[in-house]
Every structure is written in C-alpha cells, then in structure tokens.
Length: 386
Image 1 (cartoon, helix red, strand yellow):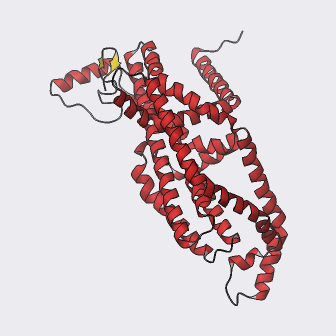
Image 2 (cartoon, one colour):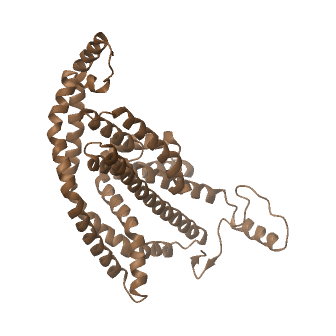
C-alpha cells in the first residue's frame, strides 16, 4: 500500500483547501460583492457615526448613533435630490432623445464632419473615412448596445442595494466585537499579535481607500460641473455626475467617463470637442499624479500593470461591481502577504528573548529581516499593545 509522507500530505491538503476556497468564492461571488459594498458603505459613514457617538455621550449605544446618521443621510439626500434631480432629469431626458440621432450619425458617417470640421480637409479623404465608418458602424453600434444591455441587466438586479445599509448597520455595530472575539480564540501570543496587525492594517487600508475615492469623486464632479457650465458643454450636470461616479472604478472608470463626455459633446454639436478632450486628458494627469498621491494611503500604492490586470480580471468575473472592489482586494491581499512573510522571517521566541536581553543590556542588535526583536510586541492584559 502506497503511503504519503507527512510533507506530501500537508502540501496536498493545502492545495485542496485553496481549491475549495476558490470554488466557494466563485459560487458566492454575488454575496461577497454585496458584503463588499456594505463594507464600503460602513467605512464611508463610520467617521460620522463616531462623531455622533461622542456627541451623545459615553452611555449611548452604537446602534443609536448609527440610526441618527442614517436619518441625517436620508434627510440630506432627500434635500439634495429635490434641488438637483429636476435639472438632472431634464438633461437625461434630452440626452435620451438625442441617442437615435447620434446612432444615425455613426451609421451614415456624418460623424466625420463633426470630428474634423476643418476647411479644406479634403473631399476624397473625407469620403474614404466616411466609407470606413459606415463599414464598421454596425459593429460599433452593436457593441454599444451590448454594453448598455449588460449595464441594465446589472441594474435590474440592484434591488440588493436595499440590503447594503442593513448589512452596513450590523458591520458598524458588531465588527469590533467580532474581531475581539476572534482574537480571544487565538491562544498563541505571537499568532494573536499577527491577527491584530493584519486586522489593523486592513482596517486602515480600507478607511484610507474609501476616503480617497470620495475626495477624488467630489473633486471631479465639482470641477467638471463648473467648467462645463462656464464653457457651455451640453448636459453639463449629467456628464459631471457620470465622471464623478466613474472615479470609483479604477483605470477603466475615468477612461470611460472621458470617452462618454467627448462623445456626447461631439454628437451634440459642441464646437470645441477636442479642446474638451485635451482638458479631460490633463485632468486625468492631475488626478493620477497630484491629487491621488496626496489623498491615497501609501499601502494602496500598486503597480499600474497589477491594477489593470486586477480590474480586467475582476470585471470578467463579476462585471462592473467586480471592477469596483478589485483594487482594495488586491491591496488587502498584499498587506496580508507582507505580514505573513514578516512573521515567517521573524526569529523564534528564544532568539527574541535573547535579543531583547542583549538590547536591554546595551549590546548591539543586528539589523535586517528576521533579526529584530519587535516582531511580536508585548501584550497588555491579553491584548496586543497599541
């Protein structure tokens, strides 16, 4: 009878566990996305909950503070909707009425005249370009229709949005208690400290990421609204709202927003569409190289190729919602990997005690990975020291 050695058995068991985990993630991807959006909403309103909780006094319950924040948000959103939604609805209706005309301009090739309104462009070159556009117009229109249909199908299942505040309520109320319960179950002090560090790093990461997204989105909406109103861009409020909303999708979101803005301006007869394109390109550079580094946490900094791959892969797996959560998930996995690697490289407890004794005695302590004596800080009352 063939017997596996212990090392092979452990490797086989590890592979099996990972395979089962990946299968569960795939099967439960919709539920996990719902949880991810609930977590995002919880991080979004958590600062407000803390402020209200302090204002109500130490004897107040977290649930009461969450309820007050929900009520304030509901009133605020209702007031904002009453002032903005009428104009937004008119612009959306006007844009929807222009969609058939825009599609006809693509199919007939007339869009070429709007794209290159330069005298003396050349009749022959213009006719060649129009023929090229007419030849590929069905594919262009068909792809746009498929994309719109996919978006509508996703929105048709958006009734789960109602569940997001419900799950966020329980996350805000019970997350700290749940984390403390898990920590109490870990008997090994080193493992308990590892769990504490991972949870703290991921918590800070998500908080910084949500804050950065909100800032980037609001800045884009305000700047685009002002510029579009001042320069007479049609459907200014709708386009600014689209640009601000798409800031939440890494890489592809801002690119899609820019294409939508320039396309609508082009089809609507705006006289300077290419100047608008130059502005959007410049704005993207400002956001990526000035604003984002200022508001984004250092732990979120990822290689651009990794971000693009993650966004595309998440979009293939879970659609637009997957694109939204791709970057924080990748960043969190990197944080966990770094903590686990540092933990594995740390010296054993006997060496840590020896190094700590040498350090307290004034002896030099070697530097480098795995040589420090602070991988597992002391515990205070069973909990890691802050």
